[in-house]
Length: 65
Image: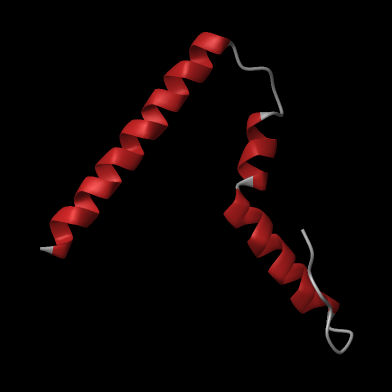
């Protein structure tokens, strides 16, 4: 990942970098990997996340019409 710094504005470059990392899911993955997660718990969490995404997509589709 690359962020260019213009006019020595490091704060803005850091903000852009953090935003890119957050959008890519980097922080979420780091949080998940902090502790070991049993495979059964991981499957359960993945199913719950998929269910949330599906419900959100359904709400979006319904609100468009």
